Image (cartoon, rainbow, N blue to C red; front, side, top):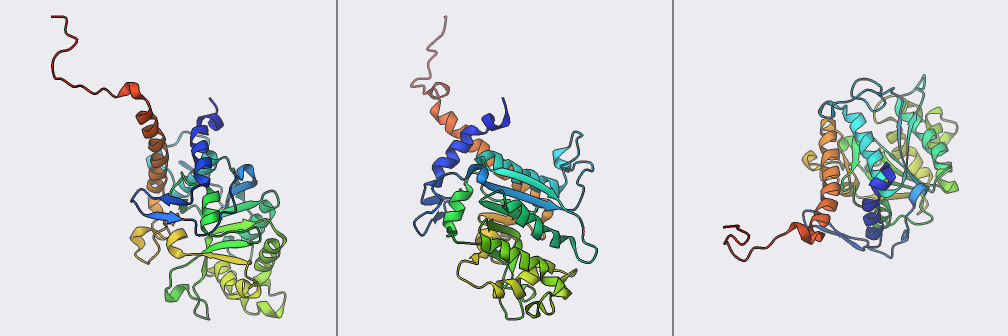
Length: 312
């Protein structure tokens, strides 16, 4: 049985969930789509999740190593990428791992921008996501999240907000957008924004003056976007911001960002395997539990404690 067929029941459940207005988390908290949903049909292979990285990732217990692996020792980066790949298989999306080449004069984070733009040419949506960020509830189709976050036909980029802490603020006092989770929509405006963002540290025009200082030090491309790009591109549909609590952080971070839908383990990357484990088990056991309850032959109700089938 191939993988596509094996995961098909979960894929079908995801399609049904796209049309739900209210979703109830396992802890009983209810979330709803606050406006009429735009994305009511599966995007399928028109949506891609991409991992972009310069590292070979072919060592022991790494994702590109062809030898057998030991999951408890699996590298957190590779575990995160496997979590992304699994999510696409559940819902019928596409997945790409893109290995980029290091720049000579800037940190590797900058390589993600052009790779994202080029990949986007083949899809309606591309989600660029860091390996230490996971979709908290893999059973939820991404179309539901697009509707929840009010992504429209005109929305260019959708990004979350960082915690409101001094080290996350731009010079105007506005929290940065976290670049570890970017939803890019294949419209001309998006590509215009990505090209401007990538060129920022080269300071090709006066509007980028001072951007070269972000070639290497953290937060690098994130600071460039926060200090330059989002102010240059300030039309209503250019940047759609997601609340930090929904698409950033993790409960133990205690920074007001619990990662309700996207759990970003900034300072707890070692938990990545556990988050992937929990997501897999939630999806698998939900399906198994439904199957268990639907199979009337496995449940026997006894009305007496007598030996009803004794030969004596």
